Image (cartoon, helix red, strand yellow):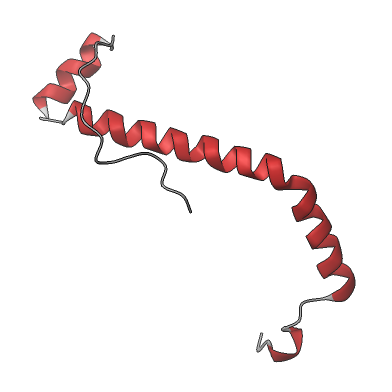
Length: 81
């Protein structure tokens, strides 16, 4: 699978708005906001990429499933379950 983003890219300072109570509680727990945001954004990108891939390949997946339903898998004779 291709790399989602360049993990070695330089950091960029940015401003954002966040719920003040959420920020206070996160700071009390010493949660690394930058790392947490990067992790959350990477997860969102993965979901977006996955959804787009499924959308782009929906027809091919459906056709392959029809073929398997009709003809079976080449390995069916070797399945032990």
